[in-house]
Length: 328
Image (tube, rainbow, N blue to C red):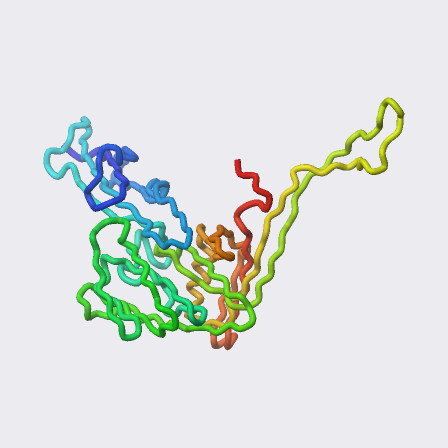
């Protein structure tokens, strides 16, 4: 009998690989061969994404899930193939993405989870740097070496290295401890005039990445409201009070915006700016709070040392909530 139909069970879960139970079955899909096709294709990324809920409160917690698929092969009479069926595969899913140039279903970095090779931190301030624990044996910050362990649990697959204040470099090595995979330069910026703001976003690898804005900050807000015309006549006296307005306002609220400037950065940081613009999850450290924001800027001209010498980016954000609390 020839292959006709494939039934796919999709399990999404946290913990260790293969630790799923019946309650982790999220989808049962079915697809059949059409015409002269020899392959059955399932697109499950958007389905799995429903179970990758990202939250961030300055806590840098690993966000990923295991996905186990079980494919049952059926013939034209819906009989299960006795040979080669079922087929089980397990994947680790993160809230990442590939660019068009990366091709179909690319596997992203298995070591350092940041595209740029440069980090900017305020002088005297520690930072965070994401790595994929499964593909890293050790990392060296300046002259201090740290071994990386991987328990296989989703809660530590993405680990966030603490960068001590005033460090200068990070070197990330493969699991063999000898192959250097990435070198990151840490620039410590002394900013005596403006208050630096830390913006955290999910980058293309599905990891939280920090980007500091060191220069001028401008805050503004936009008010929305509605009005109606009311009758102010007192029927008993056929008069009205001059202090009672005819136009009355209701449903007033506002959204607050903030415009930030990076200060001068090198063109290696262009990838970080680009991924910030594309991110659907962005937060700002605002006073002692971590607040959600949305990039309002929709266009970006990438700057280079050849064309612009020094690059400073201005990015406009809108706070992702109303000024007057109307959460219901």
